[in-house]
Length: 233
Image 1 (cartoon, rainbow, N blue to C red):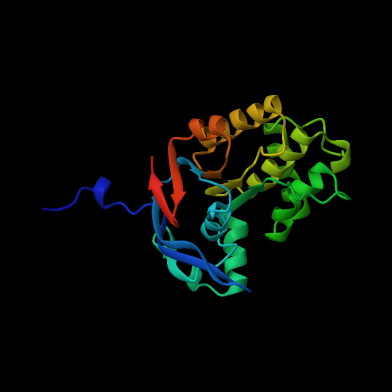
Image 2 (cartoon, rainbow, N blue to C red):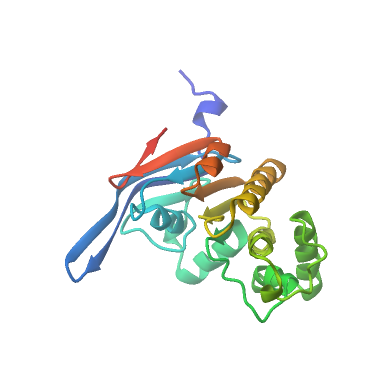
């Protein structure tokens, strides 16, 4: 019997047989073990688990920031890890947006300059990069903070700049590692709501690592890392 288009469609992201470990003075430490997970386009997913289980490692591999020891990560059926380092860096710039627990913004730059940086690295003209940065900063509620340096912004505003920077290249995949871990409850909730709104508006695939149960509950899927593998909840 022929498969229908729905059942034969490839997932947007497929991590297959991912194994990763690190050599330490005490010996080899396995972090991920034959992990397989597929994510459909536009889905939102929370990755949870105890500290040190490998959540951040898994996220970095999904975003092509780190290579697995074994296994493949396919984007639309394309194995990104066959790419050489320079091509892989370009793939990340054009297709993946990252937000981390620590915003990693450049303090000597303004909110606008920080947000525009990936666009400039990606080869956009200064005018186009600025236009994109202004538009996305306006969307995250920072149109009145464009020329403020990072030290002049609150913690919540800094993380909004980090979100804007991750979105400026209009990525298909948005990854966040404990994006509200350093924020107070009220500010964190506002960021949670913003992320959900952006996922719905832009139809981008969103994968978050979090210990925050409220944020995890707002995602359409929840996966727990356990013994190096992904367990669907």
